[in-house]
Length: 268
Image 1 (cartoon, rainbow, N blue to C red):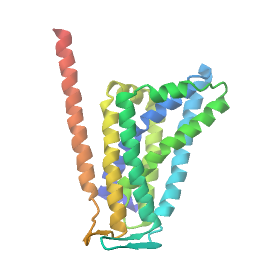
Image 2: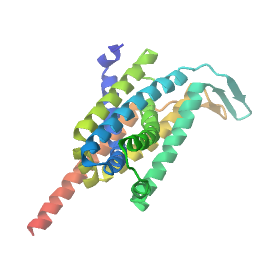
Image 3: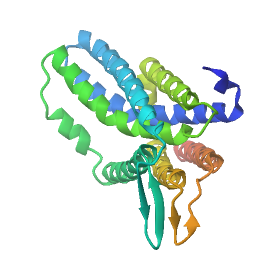
Image 4: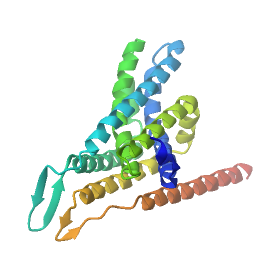
Protein backbone atom coordinates (compact mmCIF):
# COMPACT_ATOMS: atom_id res chain seq x y z
CA UNK A 1 0.00 0.00 0.00
CA UNK A 2 2.85 2.40 0.83
CA UNK A 3 5.04 1.55 -2.19
CA UNK A 4 4.10 4.92 -3.66
CA UNK A 5 6.26 6.61 -0.98
CA UNK A 6 9.34 5.30 -2.78
CA UNK A 7 8.61 7.72 -5.63
CA UNK A 8 10.21 11.22 -5.54
CA UNK A 9 7.13 12.64 -7.30
CA UNK A 10 4.95 11.27 -4.50
CA UNK A 11 7.05 13.03 -1.84
CA UNK A 12 6.91 16.33 -3.73
CA UNK A 13 3.13 16.00 -4.03
CA UNK A 14 2.82 15.01 -0.35
CA UNK A 15 4.88 17.94 0.96
CA UNK A 16 3.16 20.46 -1.33
CA UNK A 17 -0.31 19.15 -0.47
CA UNK A 18 0.42 19.13 3.28
CA UNK A 19 1.56 22.76 3.10
CA UNK A 20 -1.57 23.78 1.19
CA UNK A 21 -3.82 21.86 3.59
CA UNK A 22 -2.26 23.71 6.55
CA UNK A 23 -2.47 27.17 4.99
CA UNK A 24 -5.99 26.60 3.66
CA UNK A 25 -6.99 25.23 7.06
CA UNK A 26 -6.24 28.54 8.79
CA UNK A 27 -9.79 29.80 8.19
CA UNK A 28 -11.05 26.56 9.67
CA UNK A 29 -8.91 27.11 12.78
CA UNK A 30 -10.08 30.73 13.07
CA UNK A 31 -13.77 29.82 12.82
CA UNK A 32 -13.40 26.88 15.22
CA UNK A 33 -11.63 29.22 17.65
CA UNK A 34 -14.42 31.80 17.40
CA UNK A 35 -17.00 29.09 18.14
CA UNK A 36 -14.91 27.62 20.98
CA UNK A 37 -14.16 31.02 22.54
CA UNK A 38 -17.85 31.45 23.38
CA UNK A 39 -17.61 28.51 25.76
CA UNK A 40 -16.20 28.56 29.31
CA UNK A 41 -12.40 28.61 29.22
CA UNK A 42 -12.08 25.05 30.55
CA UNK A 43 -14.03 23.76 27.51
CA UNK A 44 -12.39 25.87 24.80
CA UNK A 45 -9.33 23.70 24.15
CA UNK A 46 -11.49 20.56 24.25
CA UNK A 47 -13.89 22.00 21.67
CA UNK A 48 -11.00 23.07 19.40
CA UNK A 49 -9.37 19.63 19.50
CA UNK A 50 -12.69 17.86 18.94
CA UNK A 51 -13.39 20.20 16.02
CA UNK A 52 -10.06 19.46 14.34
CA UNK A 53 -10.43 15.70 14.90
CA UNK A 54 -13.91 15.83 13.35
CA UNK A 55 -12.42 17.76 10.42
CA UNK A 56 -9.88 14.97 9.89
CA UNK A 57 -12.52 12.21 10.06
CA UNK A 58 -14.86 14.06 7.69
CA UNK A 59 -12.11 14.67 5.17
CA UNK A 60 -10.94 11.06 5.18
CA UNK A 61 -14.52 9.83 4.65
CA UNK A 62 -14.99 12.32 1.81
CA UNK A 63 -11.65 11.25 0.32
CA UNK A 64 -12.83 7.63 0.12
CA UNK A 65 -16.16 8.70 -1.42
CA UNK A 66 -14.59 11.02 -3.99
CA UNK A 67 -11.86 8.47 -4.82
CA UNK A 68 -14.57 5.86 -5.49
CA UNK A 69 -16.38 8.20 -7.88
CA UNK A 70 -13.13 9.15 -9.62
CA UNK A 71 -12.46 5.43 -10.13
CA UNK A 72 -15.58 5.26 -12.35
CA UNK A 73 -13.70 6.11 -15.52
CA UNK A 74 -15.89 4.36 -18.14
CA UNK A 75 -17.96 6.90 -20.13
CA UNK A 76 -21.74 6.65 -19.69
CA UNK A 77 -22.56 9.27 -22.32
CA UNK A 78 -20.90 10.68 -25.43
CA UNK A 79 -21.18 14.18 -26.82
CA UNK A 80 -20.38 14.22 -30.52
CA UNK A 81 -21.10 17.38 -32.48
CA UNK A 82 -19.45 19.12 -35.41
CA UNK A 83 -17.03 20.95 -33.12
CA UNK A 84 -16.98 18.97 -29.85
CA UNK A 85 -16.38 15.35 -28.92
CA UNK A 86 -16.12 14.08 -25.35
CA UNK A 87 -16.82 10.87 -23.45
CA UNK A 88 -18.60 11.79 -20.19
CA UNK A 89 -17.70 9.62 -17.17
CA UNK A 90 -18.21 10.13 -13.45
CA UNK A 91 -14.46 10.66 -13.16
CA UNK A 92 -14.57 13.52 -15.67
CA UNK A 93 -17.73 15.00 -14.11
CA UNK A 94 -16.23 15.07 -10.59
CA UNK A 95 -12.97 16.63 -11.80
CA UNK A 96 -14.76 19.19 -13.99
CA UNK A 97 -17.26 20.29 -11.33
CA UNK A 98 -14.48 20.25 -8.72
CA UNK A 99 -12.37 22.54 -10.89
CA UNK A 100 -15.24 24.98 -11.36
CA UNK A 101 -15.95 24.94 -7.61
CA UNK A 102 -12.32 25.65 -6.72
CA UNK A 103 -12.14 28.58 -9.14
CA UNK A 104 -15.41 30.02 -7.83
CA UNK A 105 -14.54 29.44 -4.15
CA UNK A 106 -11.03 30.86 -4.53
CA UNK A 107 -12.06 34.03 -6.33
CA UNK A 108 -14.94 34.68 -3.90
CA UNK A 109 -12.65 34.04 -0.90
CA UNK A 110 -10.02 36.41 -2.29
CA UNK A 111 -12.72 39.05 -2.85
CA UNK A 112 -14.03 38.69 0.72
CA UNK A 113 -10.57 38.78 2.29
CA UNK A 114 -9.58 41.88 0.32
CA UNK A 115 -12.88 43.79 0.31
CA UNK A 116 -14.82 42.32 3.28
CA UNK A 117 -12.23 40.99 5.76
CA UNK A 118 -14.65 40.86 8.72
CA UNK A 119 -17.61 39.33 6.84
CA UNK A 120 -17.28 35.68 7.89
CA UNK A 121 -16.17 36.42 11.44
CA UNK A 122 -19.10 38.80 12.01
CA UNK A 123 -21.58 36.24 10.65
CA UNK A 124 -20.23 33.55 12.94
CA UNK A 125 -20.04 35.78 16.01
CA UNK A 126 -23.71 36.62 15.57
CA UNK A 127 -24.67 33.00 16.35
CA UNK A 128 -25.08 32.24 20.04
CA UNK A 129 -23.39 29.21 21.59
CA UNK A 130 -24.19 28.18 25.14
CA UNK A 131 -23.11 24.53 25.42
CA UNK A 132 -20.28 22.29 24.24
CA UNK A 133 -22.70 20.21 22.15
CA UNK A 134 -23.96 23.31 20.30
CA UNK A 135 -20.37 24.38 19.65
CA UNK A 136 -19.52 20.94 18.27
CA UNK A 137 -22.57 20.96 15.96
CA UNK A 138 -21.54 24.35 14.60
CA UNK A 139 -17.94 23.15 14.23
CA UNK A 140 -19.12 20.06 12.28
CA UNK A 141 -20.97 22.33 9.83
CA UNK A 142 -17.92 24.60 9.49
CA UNK A 143 -15.64 21.58 9.01
CA UNK A 144 -17.85 20.19 6.24
CA UNK A 145 -17.84 23.48 4.33
CA UNK A 146 -14.06 23.75 4.53
CA UNK A 147 -13.59 20.04 3.75
CA UNK A 148 -14.94 20.44 0.23
CA UNK A 149 -12.17 22.65 -1.16
CA UNK A 150 -9.62 20.73 0.89
CA UNK A 151 -10.64 17.43 -0.73
CA UNK A 152 -10.76 18.90 -4.23
CA UNK A 153 -7.30 20.39 -3.73
CA UNK A 154 -6.01 16.96 -2.64
CA UNK A 155 -7.56 15.31 -5.70
CA UNK A 156 -6.05 17.90 -8.02
CA UNK A 157 -2.58 17.54 -6.52
CA UNK A 158 -2.46 13.72 -6.53
CA UNK A 159 -4.69 12.52 -9.38
CA UNK A 160 -2.69 10.33 -11.75
CA UNK A 161 0.20 9.78 -9.34
CA UNK A 162 1.23 6.13 -8.93
CA UNK A 163 0.35 2.99 -10.83
CA UNK A 164 -2.46 1.83 -8.54
CA UNK A 165 -5.80 3.57 -7.88
CA UNK A 166 -5.16 3.58 -4.11
CA UNK A 167 -1.76 5.31 -4.43
CA UNK A 168 -3.28 8.79 -4.67
CA UNK A 169 -5.69 7.98 -1.84
CA UNK A 170 -2.79 6.97 0.44
CA UNK A 171 -1.03 10.29 -0.23
CA UNK A 172 -4.21 12.29 0.36
CA UNK A 173 -4.99 10.57 3.67
CA UNK A 174 -1.39 10.99 4.90
CA UNK A 175 -1.39 14.70 3.97
CA UNK A 176 -4.74 15.30 5.71
CA UNK A 177 -3.67 13.48 8.90
CA UNK A 178 -0.29 15.29 9.04
CA UNK A 179 -1.87 18.72 8.43
CA UNK A 180 -4.56 18.22 11.10
CA UNK A 181 -2.00 16.97 13.66
CA UNK A 182 0.24 19.99 12.94
CA UNK A 183 -2.74 22.33 13.28
CA UNK A 184 -3.73 20.73 16.59
CA UNK A 185 -0.21 21.13 18.00
CA UNK A 186 0.70 24.52 16.50
CA UNK A 187 -2.75 26.04 15.91
CA UNK A 188 -2.03 29.28 17.73
CA UNK A 189 1.45 29.77 16.23
CA UNK A 190 0.19 29.08 12.69
CA UNK A 191 -2.71 31.50 13.20
CA UNK A 192 -0.38 34.24 14.45
CA UNK A 193 2.00 33.72 11.50
CA UNK A 194 -0.80 33.87 8.90
CA UNK A 195 -2.37 36.92 10.56
CA UNK A 196 1.03 38.61 10.46
CA UNK A 197 1.54 37.59 6.81
CA UNK A 198 -1.95 37.51 5.22
CA UNK A 199 -0.41 37.40 1.76
CA UNK A 200 0.45 33.73 2.41
CA UNK A 201 -3.23 32.81 2.54
CA UNK A 202 -4.02 34.87 -0.56
CA UNK A 203 -1.16 33.07 -2.29
CA UNK A 204 -2.61 29.68 -1.32
CA UNK A 205 -6.04 30.72 -2.62
CA UNK A 206 -4.37 31.75 -5.88
CA UNK A 207 -2.85 28.27 -6.08
CA UNK A 208 -6.38 26.87 -5.87
CA UNK A 209 -7.30 28.76 -9.04
CA UNK A 210 -4.40 27.04 -10.81
CA UNK A 211 -5.47 23.66 -9.42
CA UNK A 212 -9.05 24.36 -10.56
CA UNK A 213 -7.93 25.00 -14.14
CA UNK A 214 -5.76 21.87 -13.97
CA UNK A 215 -8.74 19.77 -12.83
CA UNK A 216 -10.89 21.08 -15.70
CA UNK A 217 -8.13 20.35 -18.25
CA UNK A 218 -7.61 16.87 -16.76
CA UNK A 219 -11.35 16.15 -16.93
CA UNK A 220 -11.34 17.07 -20.61
CA UNK A 221 -8.21 14.99 -21.22
CA UNK A 222 -9.63 11.90 -19.48
CA UNK A 223 -12.81 12.27 -21.54
CA UNK A 224 -10.64 12.42 -24.70
CA UNK A 225 -12.27 15.76 -25.46
CA UNK A 226 -11.68 17.27 -28.88
CA UNK A 227 -12.56 20.85 -29.75
CA UNK A 228 -12.58 21.51 -33.52
CA UNK A 229 -10.56 18.33 -33.95
CA UNK A 230 -7.86 19.32 -31.43
CA UNK A 231 -7.55 17.01 -28.42
CA UNK A 232 -7.14 18.71 -25.04
CA UNK A 233 -4.06 17.57 -23.13
CA UNK A 234 -3.50 17.33 -19.40
CA UNK A 235 -1.36 19.94 -17.63
CA UNK A 236 1.82 18.28 -16.25
CA UNK A 237 1.86 18.50 -12.45
CA UNK A 238 5.53 19.46 -12.54
CA UNK A 239 4.48 22.86 -13.89
CA UNK A 240 2.15 23.31 -10.91
CA UNK A 241 4.80 22.29 -8.38
CA UNK A 242 7.31 24.68 -9.95
CA UNK A 243 4.81 27.56 -9.95
CA UNK A 244 3.99 26.97 -6.27
CA UNK A 245 7.65 26.64 -5.24
CA UNK A 246 8.69 29.73 -7.22
CA UNK A 247 5.81 31.83 -5.84
CA UNK A 248 6.64 30.79 -2.28
CA UNK A 249 10.31 31.64 -2.80
CA UNK A 250 9.38 35.12 -4.05
CA UNK A 251 6.96 35.59 -1.12
CA UNK A 252 9.58 34.56 1.47
CA UNK A 253 12.06 36.99 -0.12
CA UNK A 254 9.42 39.73 0.11
CA UNK A 255 8.77 38.88 3.76
CA UNK A 256 12.50 39.07 4.49
CA UNK A 257 12.77 42.40 2.65
CA UNK A 258 9.77 43.86 4.50
CA UNK A 259 11.22 42.76 7.83
CA UNK A 260 14.55 44.37 6.96
CA UNK A 261 12.83 47.63 5.98
CA UNK A 262 10.84 47.65 9.24
CA UNK A 263 14.08 47.24 11.23
CA UNK A 264 15.72 50.09 9.30
CA UNK A 265 12.72 52.37 9.86
CA UNK A 266 12.62 51.51 13.56
CA UNK A 267 16.35 52.19 13.88
CA UNK A 268 16.01 55.55 12.11
